[in-house]
Image: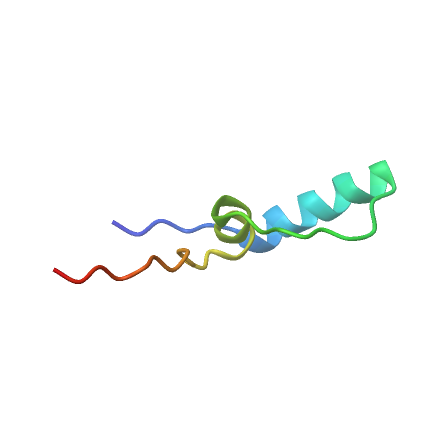
Length: 51
């Protein structure tokens, strides 16, 4: 199964909404923000446990 996501369309929508609200900068720090706009999977590092 092939699923296509149009990430550029998502970015364009966010930019449009930001412009309407007068927002100049988007700073996405949450995993959902990063993956929604870029498609990248970027998990937070977790500490390693010995044992």
